[in-house]
Amino acid sequence: MEKEDRVVELPAAPSKDAVETALGELDVVFAFVFNRVGNRPDAEDLTQQVAMKAIPRLRQGASAISIRAYLFATARSVLASFWAAKFGLAEEELLEGMGAATGVAPAATESTDAAARATRILAALPDNYRRVLELRFLRGYSIKEVATELRATPGSIKVMQLRALRAAARIPFDA
Amino acid sequence: MEERVNRVVEDLLRGRSPRIRARDAAEREAIMTAAILAAGQDAHPRMSPELRRRLAALVAGEEPRRVDRRTALAAVAGLAVGALGVVGLDRLGVKPGPSPTLAPVPAGVVKAGPVRWVPVAALADLREGEPVRIVAGKVSAWLTRRGETVTAVSTLCSHWPCVLDFQAQASTLKCPCHTGASFALDGAPLSDAYPELKPLDKYAVRVENGIVMVLGT
Image 1: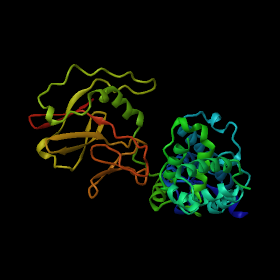
Image 2: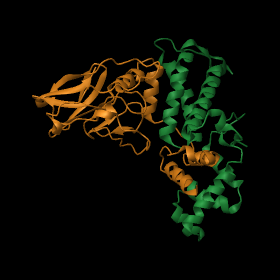
Image 3: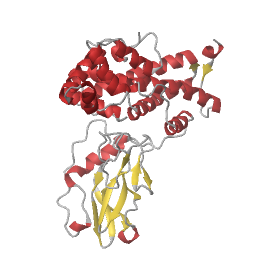
Image 4: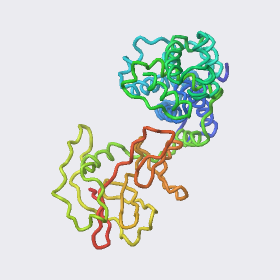
């Protein structure tokens, strides 16, 4: 608990420790963002955006708990803007009709293990859907390789992949 | 639709920023779920050492090498560079037409003021394929000579307003703010990681009597 109550403050020339503490928090932000955008270039970009927004707050000094809360609120808002911009939607349109499945909406608790999350989501799918997504996302098969493995045409695998992703979207991000 | 979603999946599986269009919005849930599943390939993602160094510098209060993008955009808007394009030595002797029409400047953006040809270098001083950074009023550019042609591209990344570094070994312009974002010396984006990266802004160049001039302010 002592750690949680400590005040994190970055003066004009912050100590090495203060920088390390802030970086530790940003490490967690990076994993949080990466787990939702699924690629490194975007995750790095968004983490940097979160850092730039949060630095003035860090300089004012605040408890570690409130800094973490602020970082994650910022990360969620940066993620929502990112996806909204990608799809050309307003942020409120983006989340309309969507559940917590995408992980942009706040989750009470979150596992940090993305592989475990992927496995859990896939386990909740019907067999044929699960097989396609497992081969694609966990084993890195190409569409052609999946088609050969499942004795189907590449075209039908693409259709099944889309249907499987739609079904997976209805499974909560964190159980 | 399955083709478009598959293209996004392919990008994600290759570790790239996915190419998504507005027309893909109907499948946003499937696409965002694909991103979550793609993250499963890396059980414990950590930032790259390069990003860590950059963030450490930011947190420590070291000024990032950024300039106000609005200023840069104002300069570009004022120059109507798109209409003029880049003038190489092959067009030497061709007088530029009447003063370029100023593009409407959006509200809140600083007006760059009148434009003029600014002498920035002697042609003889420019080495083949070795860019030099020049400033012509509010225009800041990398100037590169290729044979008898000289081109000028913005020193600012087309994505974020970070000043690009010249990487002599690879002969590219590299963005210090994004791992893997780089451009050819003519401004063409090279990054596989950022398929949507736009080319760099170009500035008009002309050479007269061995003097290289850039249309600046």
